[in-house]
Image (cartoon, rainbow, N blue to C red):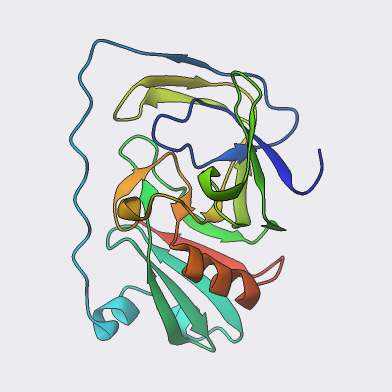
Length: 206
C-alpha cells in the first residue's frame, strides 16, 4: 500500500468515512427491507465561550497545537496554548457508528488520498473521491464492526481507521452521517492539514 491509497472496509452508501489498512478483509454489506432513517439535522451553532467551556480544564492548560472535536455540537476546535484559534463545522459518526471518543493523536497525514471500493476494487480520486483532498488519521482498531448505518446493514471485518477528511458532499457537514470519520469542508481540512503534524493531540468529546 502506498501512502496515497486506502482500502475502506464497507460499502459507500453514506460515503464511508473509515479507510482501513491493506490487511483489511472485504466486508459484506447486506441491504435490508428497513426504510432509510431520516437525514439528521445540522447542529445548532454555539458561542465561542460555550465552545471553550466544553473543553476539559487540563486541555486548556496544554501548550502547543491540539485538536478537540465536539461531537454533540459537531464542531472541530483548533487550540494553541489553550486558546481556541479556529472553529470548523464537522460531520461526525451516525448513531451506532459514533466517532471514537477519547484522547488520540494524529497517526497519518496524506495529500490527495485515493479511495478504494472494498467490493469491486475501483479506485476513486479527483472530485468524486469520498475522502476529498486531505486525510488526517487519528484512530485505528482491528475489532471489526457491524450494524445498521441509517441506510443499510454493514458487516465490517478487519482493521478500520478514523480521521479527518474532506468531502465532495458539502451538505453533510454539520450532521451526524458518517461511519466514524470527521468530514470537513475542503478549504477547512486543508487548513487543518497544514496546522498539525503526526503526533498532534486529538481529543474527541462525546
